[in-house]
Length: 102
Image 1 (cartoon, helix red, strand yellow):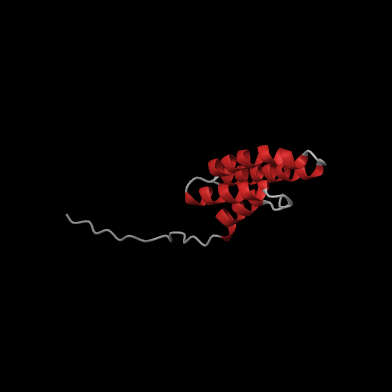
Image 2: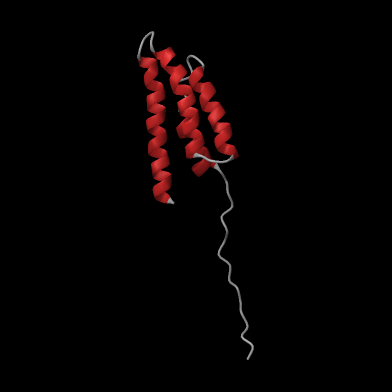
């Protein structure tokens, strides 16, 4: 599980860096976002399946398609939301007593 979490984090950082890199290219960058936005949304859905992934896909699509919002690290924020900030209750160890009847 830790390896999967590490890979998601590294992939998220790379995708965020690629999304932000389009801002560095004058005049062409906004047009690259038209190609990058659907690709980023698809990758987000693949990395985080289920309802959370679908919502995050829409958010990353909007973030990439809107001008000036490329600075937001959506993939990294989704990683932290999923693995750091979520307060999932972990099952506690339970002791089960067993009687042996002979």
